[in-house]
Image 1: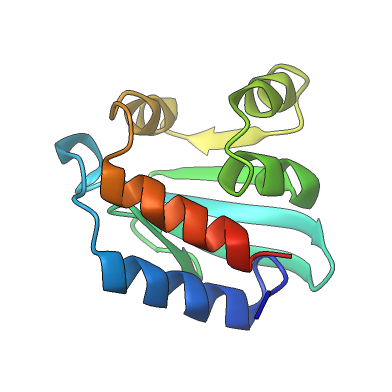
Image 2: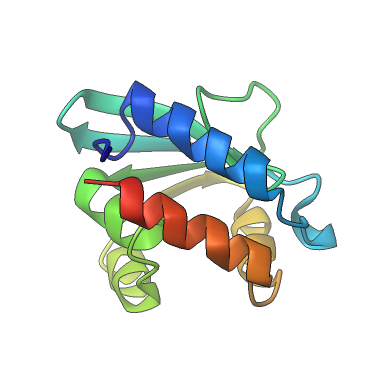
Length: 129
């Protein structure tokens, strides 16, 4: 059953998929926590975090970095895995970064996703509307 991106059922199903497949977490992101505020979603602004390779609802008080991203850009970044859209949004100021920019760079430097991570991405994409 498809779920709207970033809705409560979407977060629940995404975490279930990640737990089932249990992809390895690259060393560069094992201790990485980045807060994310997604603006203008169908449910209003959504607060989430990227924590040790997981995408979870809610902000982390200890996160050194916060990204603010429009809903449509977040969808392209996290579901469509469109690096061109991410770069264009960043360069045009649609993605705002507060705090430690090196944490965002660490996320990008983690290298290509594992086979298991690709499976997680594919299943999450399939269940996202």
